[in-house]
Length: 85
Image 1: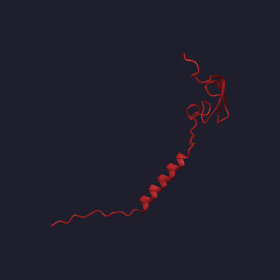
Image 2: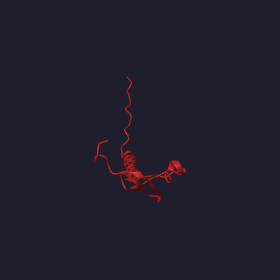
Image 3: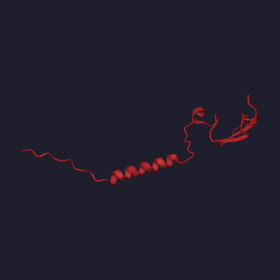
Image 4: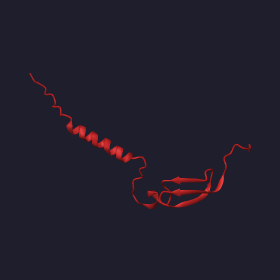
């Protein structure tokens, strides 16, 4: 292996989850913060909860409300009648 090209390895790196759980693992970063871990992930806990860190659900709901509002205001076109001779 070449010397001085690999990052420093920490054997007791600390990983902190937003739920409060703390893990000690080996990593190239000494400390990390995560939003979801195995203790609080809905797949493992069986609880349904929306994990939305960037407000994506609210943005989607706003777009959906705009679209339905626009469709309500849109005038309804009458179908053309065919004149028979």
